[in-house]
Structures are given as structure tokens and as C-alpha cells.
Amino acid sequence: MQYKLYSPLRIWHVFQVLLTLYLLIRKRERFLLFSPLSAEKLTEVITSLGASFIKLAQVLATRNDFFPPHYLNALKTLHDELPPMDETTMQEVFERAFEKTPFREFKKEPIASASIGQVHEAWLDDTTKVAVKLRREGIERQVRADIRILTMFNRLFRPLFSHYTKHSIEAVITEFSSMILKEVSLNQERANLIRFSETYADMGVRFPVAYESLSSDDALVMSFEEGFRFDDKASIENAEIDIRPIIDTLVTFYTEQMLVKGFFHADPHPGNLLISKEGQLILLDFGMVKRVPNETRIAIIELIKAANEQDYERYVNASKRLGTIAYDAPTSELAEFTESMFEIFNNDALDSASMQLLAFEVLEKTRNLPFKLPQEAIYILRVSAIIEGLGTTYIENFNGIKDILPILQKNIPRALGAKESILETLIDEFSQFPLDIRAFRSSIYKISEENLSVELSKQQLEVIEQKLSHKVSSVTVTLGMMLAAIFLVAYDRHYENFALLLFGVGLLRLFLIKK
Image (cartoon, rainbow, N blue to C red):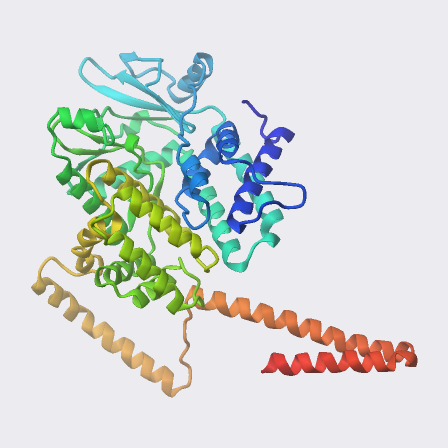
């Protein structure tokens, strides 16, 4: 279905989708006269809305704590595939990107067609085969319009949700809006590809080579990489490729990205991961690339260490620092939940399907707990879910606790900045010693001058803000009651008894607030 940017029908369908998502998250059967769409209808409407909403749904499909299983399963069926541009439109984009064709041969029929662009085969000369990604006509205007509509409805629905859920949803929409705007720029994708190739040149993973002089915001020209899709199990087995070391390479590669370098590819779906006939991993499509802040990486490392040691309270505290659990959430209750999840994933007698079923049952009981999803964690969780899904294609009982975490554990020292050898580490520490002494002296001086400031974390500030807001609201209502009592007495002495009662209740509230 084709829509105009702000057509009433498109806005209505966006309203239906977002209201359904919000009702599911809040576990409500209806709002006024509106009920949520069925899982099948929801995916149908999302597909008709196109790129922005398909990608948003793919991100939300990682939220086991938000949606019932049948909705999650429906959202996971969404694919970012669209019919190609018609030949006239494609030719317009091509001519805008290339004033004079640099190709000896260019195949007009695309080999892949997604919401942002489509990929064509071409040859620069008799031996140099390239992939040419053309940006879909009007996609940037469409995405910007979608973000405006999403933002409008998010503000409309905001009062319906709790403090915790509200911030999770806003984080999803904010992060999604920022990411998809970058993804529609092929100049940005080219820059990501070049930086990735340089940063991870020694990881044993192959990347396309960008032809910068031929590329623009409308077209990205790259070397043509060939291989089997990661999930093409039959072809990989027929080629007698040993998949286990490739999975180890994939996990190690993403460990390096998320924990060590903090610069990672956020969309490793099977179509973007190829395996060459020689058994080398090939990574494609660099539109979705994220940077992980240092504090987030440290929190993830703490999570990994706690997970390996099965220290549940420490795991919950690390989750709070990461921001996936509200800072003031009950640690003991969440530790019990975490222990239940670990018992499931450590049970060697369970297959992957049984593990997932039991995990959903535990999650269902805890959906009212204050889980959150900060911006930085959205794509990390999505990547983890995708990699786990790829692993289960080949390895029975492959899951994050048993297979991924032990591999990540090996990388913790490097992630924390340790050098390759003990000598290098000692030299690095001694080089920092004069700076540490200076910082210590500065702190002592500030303490003696009573000028030492304390920096609070974002989570602490958020809790303080919430409690302060509640206090201010309570005080405002209380003072309003007391002023109303004074006004009643001044207006008519016959209301004196009622005014005294109102004033007394207000005074009692003020005393309780101070308590």
C-alpha cells in the first residue's frame, strides 16, 4: 500500500500500531473504545507502513518482558524486504549518483531490495565485480515524516504509562529515530565501513572494500563479496565447512566490538553475515553501527563476571548500573528472578525450545518489576538475541549463559584496559602513578577547603528527580488545601467547621510529608 507522507490513513495506521504496542506493554485489554490489533493484523499493518516501522518492530521484538510470546513470534517474522524501485525511478537515482557511468556493465535487476536501498551487480572492467547500493527514492523524506508522527503519538500516550515503562519506550523511540536517520545516509554507511575495516583489520573477518571516489549519498560502490548466508545450513554442510570455529570467531568478534573497542555493528542478521567457501566470516551492510559508552562497557563486564560466578545480587546491581533495571528496584526480589533464569539456562537436560518456554513463564511472572531499557542497551540486546539465534541453528542448546559468557570472560582483562603482557601492564600503571598522586593531592586540598563535590550517576539523579517531583506535588496539594481553608473562612464564616477540617487535614499531610 502506498501512502502520502502525512495521509490520514497512514496516521491512523500509525496510531493503531503504537496504541497496540502500548496496551500490550501495559497489559491492558482496551483504552476507551480501542482494543489492540491481533498479532497477525499488527504485522500486516507494520509491513504496509514500510521501513521505519518494520525496523522499529524488529527492535521491539527483542523485548521478552514487554510482549506475550505470540506477539513476539509475529514481530520476529517481519523482514526488511520490499519490491524494487521501478526502472524509471531507479534510473533517476542512478543518473543523480553518477553523472557519467563508471561501469562496463550494470545489471538493472537488483539482487536484493530492502527499505533503505537496493543492491545491483556491476563490473568496473572485465575482472572487477562490484556491488552498487542505490538509495531508495524519497526514503529520507519518508523517514523524517515517520519520526515526526512517532514523536507526536509518543507525547500523546506518555501520560498513560508508569515512570519506568515511559522511559523505556521513550528510549526505544529516541534511539530508533537517531539510528534510522543515519542509516538512510549512504555517506554515513561508507564512513562506517571504512572505519570498521581499519579498526578490526586483525580479527580474521572480511569486509567489503569501498570505492570512495565513485560513492555518494545516493550510491555506495563496494567490492562484491560472495559466500553462503550464515543460516544456509545445507550449503555450508555440503561444502564441508566446520561451523564451530566460525561461531567462535563471530562471538569473539562481537566481544571485541562491544566490550573492548566499543564500536559495533548493530544488525548482524543472517543476510548480512556470509561464510566464504574457504570458511571465512564476511560482514556486510554498515548502516546500523553504534558506539558503546565506556560506563556501559564496564557495566556489561560486571554483568559477565557476576553471571559466570552466579553471584545474583551482584548481577542485579550491575544491571542497575547498566540501566536495564531501575536504580531503586528491590535487589532481593530481582536476585530471586535472576537465579530462576540461571537455573533454566544451566540445565543441560533442556533443549533450546524448552529453555525458551520456561524463560517466558518466569518473565511473565515478573512483567510488573521495574525493568528498563536505556538507549545504549537496545541494540546490544538485539545483537545478543540474533547471535544466539544463529548459534542455535548449528549447536544444540546454544545459549548466552552456557556458550557466550565463558568466551567473553576471557576478554575481560583486555576490556578493562590491560596490556598483552604483565610487563606492559606494570609499565602502563607506573606511567599513570604521577597523575594519580596529583589527583590525590588535589582531592585532599578540596576536602580541607570544604570544596569537594560529589558526582551522582544518572540512575541516582533519576531516582532523586522522581522522589522530588512526588514531594513537590504532595506539598503543592497540601498547601492548596490549607489556602482553600483560609479562603473559605474569609469568604463565609458559616464554612468555619469545614475550613478547620480542611486545614487540619492539610496540616496532617504536611507533617506526614516531612516524616
